[in-house]
Image (cartoon, rainbow, N blue to C red; front, side, top):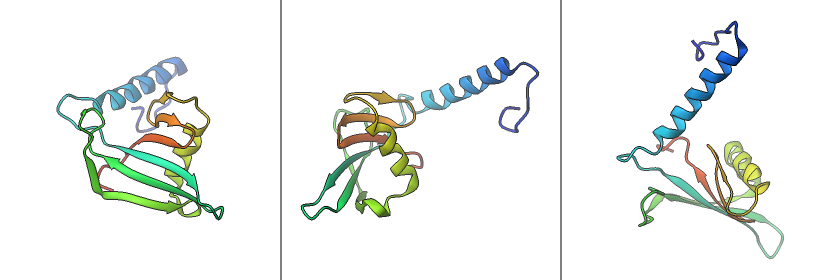
Length: 122
C-alpha cells in the first residue's frame, strides 16, 4: 500500500511502515550469501587546478580480501560526475572522518570515501 502511494489515516502508521521497509532494504544488503559491492572514491585536485575523482569498485566490502572489479574503475573530471555520485560525495563531505551514513557510505578522510553501489550491473 505504501509503494502505491496510499495515505494512511494515521500518519504515524504510514511513517512506521515506510521506516520498516527502508530497514528491510538495508538489511537485505548484508545477507551472509550476498556480496556487498562498494565504490572506493578519491577526490583530488591536479597541479593545474582541475578536480578529478577516481572510483574503484570493491566486489564485496564484507570480505577481508578486497577484490577489485576492474570493469568498474574510472577517473572522472569533476564536471562530468553523474548526479547520483556527486550527491553522495557531497553528503559524505559534510561528515566527520570514520562516519557511516546508511544508504550512502563511509567517510575515510576528507577526500576518500566508500560509497554503496545502487545498481550492481552498472
